[in-house]
Length: 289
Ligand SMILES: NC(=O)c1ccc[n+]([C@@H]2O[C@H](COP(=O)([O-])OP(=O)(O)OC[C@H]3O[C@@H](n4cnc5c(N)ncnc54)[C@H](OP(=O)(O)O)[C@@H]3O)[C@@H](O)[C@H]2O)c1
Image (cartoon, rainbow, N blue to C red):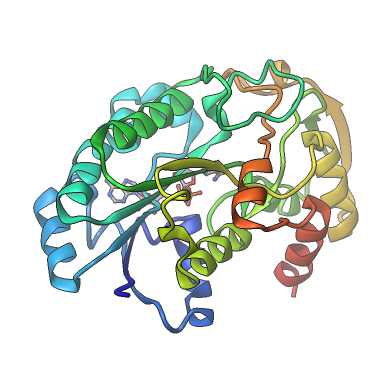
């Protein structure tokens, strides 16, 4: 089976992890394009790249992920997280390309007191969440073949992320972290390996797998404060971590419960992602080398 894969947005956090992990999946033909090489809005360039490399799968890592910027520049957020998906998914349909796309826990309002499942009602609290939800809807409406993976609080050695922020705060005396927000730190490596493995073993092409939204995170539901304390311990940082409330820390509305149920992905792919603490410990050991 032809598994020529195009990964777009390849210089972002997740895209960089796809590049880093590619050598473990030598059978896959993977072509990477960053924003300079392929702007997601340049549909002619996208079309010719698909034709030239005979692409069968597109993994879309393009996004505007800065939640504060999405609030102040709603036009760009909408263009990149929503409108771009109209062209991308219609070209996938026309050329019979499977679209693998990433979305977020921020499509939910966080008022539920257990992890959100894929069938729960969405109700984003901020513009980032709304634009990402609208992007999901464009893909589903297009009739292309797709997998949408909602992920949350992702981290890696690349770009800015919450885990690196804490580790790199070592010169500060204290840090106030929300004790009223729960989430699940999720390593980009585990997301990337999940995708590559399931392309490699053809699982992703199965009829019951395609055209689904899946939640993928590590296991566990710690508060942001708990995560900070764990990082402090693992990275051996001398900083005072203080309990705070999200309303005093962020001017942007964020869901208090940002946890996603991973029952569907566990059952349908027969996997058990690592607990968040185990994965975090692995990452910090590697990052601090
Ligand atoms: N990070 C998280 O905690 C998190 C949580 C849940 C879901 N997600 C989702 O996971 C996916 C990947 O996120 P990430 O963390 O890798 O984000 P990221 O580091 O911000 O990467 C996004 C990439 O998109 C590129 N891009 C922006 N506009 C573009 C355009 N017009 N054409 C082509 N490329 C463009 C950016 O390039 P420039 O940097 O050059 O602008 C950047 O390389 C996104 O769908 C995001 O919504 C992330």
